[in-house]
Length: 550
Ligand code: ADP
Image 1 (tube, protein in one colour):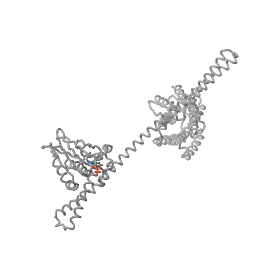
Image 2 (cartoon, protein in one colour):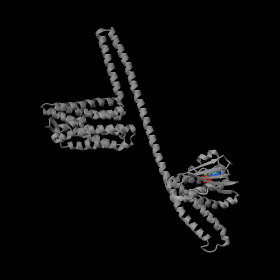
Image 3 (cartoon, protein in one colour):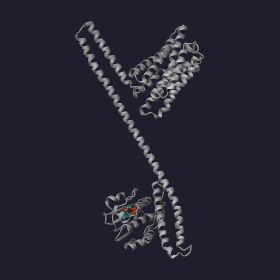
Image 4 (tube, helix red, strand yellow):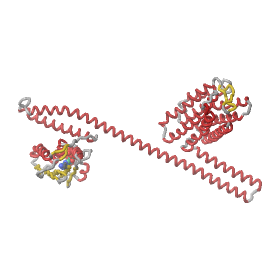
C-alpha cells in the first residue's frame, strides 16, 4: 500500500516536471510561463521529497529532513499559483502590493519551515511510517498560503470569468478544474499532519481517492494548454519529438560511422537522417499552420456569434423602444380626447340653443369652431386606433346583425355638402335585400367613410359610384372618376409608412396618409379583404372591400 502510494506521488512529480519544463521552454520571456515553471518546480520539490520521505526506512533523522524539505517546497506553491493566476488574467500589474505581501510572507514561511515551530517532528499515521507533524506556526501557512492566496486566486478567476472572451473562458474552465483537483486532493495532507484521520474508518480508501484526484491535476491545465492554446504546448511537443528522433538517428549514424566507416549501411543511415530531418521540418510547419488556421476559425466563429448576439440585443431594444413610444402616444391621446369630448359636448349644447339664442354675429365662428373640434376628434381617434393596431390590441369588437346599407347612407348624407359644392355625383347601387354581417358598426363606418371621403376628395370631375353586391360574401365597390393612382404607389397604399401620392398632395394638401392604413387594419380585423384597382394617373380608382356574411 505504501509503495503504491509512493509511486502515485512519483508519477505526480514526473508529470509536473515534464509539463513545467515544456511550458517554461515554450516562452521563456512571458511572465505566466516563467511563473508556471516556478510553480512546477515547487510542486516537484514537494513531490520528490514526499516520495523520498515515504521510502525512508527506520531513520527518524532522514525522515525529518525530507519532511522539512517537502514543506519547504510546499511553502512556495500558493504564492506562485497566485502570481500565475494574476498573470493569466493580466492583473499582475494592478496587484503588486498583494503580490509583494504574499512573497514576503512566503519568505518567512520558507525560513520557518526548517524550524520545529513549523515542522516539529515526524509521526506515523495509517499505513505511513513517517508523516510530518505540524508545529505551532504551521496554521499560519494554512490560513494565509493555502486558504487566502489560493482561494483569492480562484475567486479572481471566477469574478473575471464573465468578462473573458470565448477562448479564454474555455481555458479558464480547465484551469479552475485543475486547481480544485490539486488543492482539493492535497488538502488531506494537512489533517494527517495534525494526526487527524479525515475519513475515519474509510481512512485508506479516502487517502487513495484524494491521491487519485491529486495525481492528474496538471492534466486539465495541460489540456487547456493544448486544446485552447493557453500556452500553445502542442507545437512544443511536436518540436521535442522531432528533435529527439533526429538526434537518435544522428547518433546512430555517428556510431555506425565510427565502427565501420563509410559503408553502404552508414550512407543509408545518413540518408534516413536527412529524410527525417526534412519530414520533421515539414511536420512542425504543418502543425504551426494547423494551429493558426484553427485559431482563425475559432476567432471567426466567435466573432459571428458576438455579432449575432449584438444584433439580437439591438432588435430587442428597438422593439422595446417602439412599444414604449406607442404606449406613450396612446396615453397622451387619451388625455387629449377627454377635453375634446367635453368641448364637443358644450358646442353641441350651444348650437342647439341650450344656453339661449345664438347672436347672429357668433353663428359663423361657432360653426367653424364646431367643424374644427370634430376634425380634431377624428384625428385623435385615428391616432389612437393606429397605436392600438400597432400594439396588436383588439380595436374591433364584432357583433352580429349589422346592416351595411344604413351605414353607407349615413356617410353619403354626411358628404352631401362637399359633393354638391364640387358638383359631383355620389350614387349607391344595391340589391333589394342585403345580408346582415358580423361587424363593429362604429369602426366599419370609419373605414367606409375614409374610402368614400377619399373618392370624393380626389375626384375633381365626374363622381363616385358605390355598388354593393352579395353572394357568399358581401362586396362593396367604390369607383370614382378622379385622379387615379400610379401603379408603383399601389403596393404601399395600406402600409404603416403612411404614403401619399404626388398628385394627391397637389389636389388635397392637408392629407396625412393614415386613413387607408386604419381602413385596411379595420377590414382585416373583420376577416375581410381590401384592394384597389386603377389604370393609372387621371384614370380614376376603384376600391374593393370584401366582407364575410353571417
Ligand atoms: P390622405 O387622404 O389623408 O392622404 P389616405 O390614407 O386616406 O390619406 O390616403 C393615402 C393616399 O392614397 C392618398 O394621399 C392618395 O395619394 C391615395 N388615395 C387614396 N384614395 C384615393 C382615391 N380615391 N383616388 C386617388 N388616390 C387616392
